[in-house]
Length: 156
Image (cartoon, rainbow, N blue to C red; front, side, top):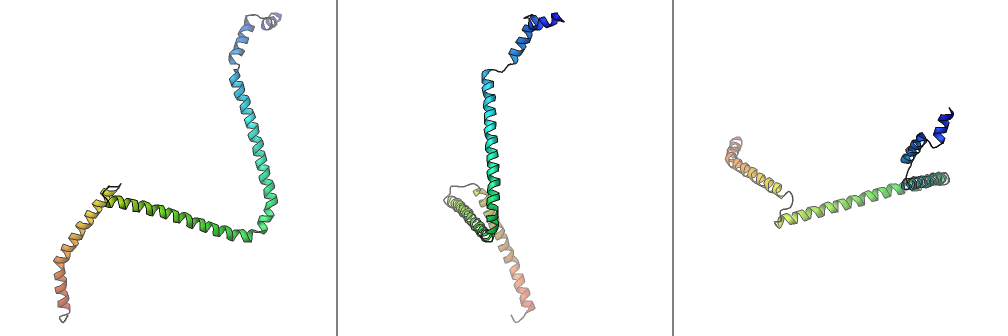
């Protein structure tokens, strides 16, 4: 037992390997500074969080009754402000949409072929083709209907 105790403390071969193991796993100065910075930053943020929560609770306790007493005034005001904000945002959104549509139409009319112009041209040709078919159908069967109307009302 004395040999064993002497080997660990007395600078024997086992003590050297243990010391080397400890030194290889020891953090360097950069890691120590980073860890200390982490601890300090965490402590400061924890302190600020505590102060914020404390301030919020104190403000709620102090201003809560005041807000409760004046709520008949604030609720209609808040509702009116909400409606006004919604109307303003809607108007701005519609203005942006109108500007985008006007810009697209201007580019289309001037021949710059904006995105989707080919689809508009295809739809226009389909509508023109369908209108031509309807016109031909009306010419073909329009006389038939006109003749049937004369048969139903001979004096007309």
